[in-house]
Length: 142
Image (cartoon, one colour):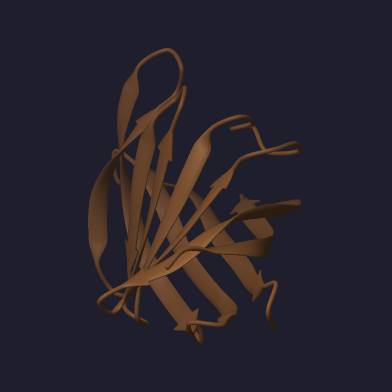
């Protein structure tokens, strides 16, 4: 059963030692199917993906997938210790990027919780950025 939730997201992107921090609080939907949790929300300011629909697929503490639709479609798979190639639509064309999962901490239950995942992005195997994402999911019942 889908639940309405309050979502807080903090993203920290590090490029050449410089950090850029983006924070977002929004509402969305949250549900579990088998052992996988799904979190869906619409991007808002200050995100550069404003108006797009984002789904986070939380597969225990080993894998997080992020899928965006509604403009510049993209998918990102973060799996600890694994490098995935993912498509990213820049608005000018699609680009293939490497996504290397560094760490995933997940304490999400049917009542919400939090997840932190860290990954690096590379273009043609050259490091582009290191990213930390902190997501808190609060159900209206909790």
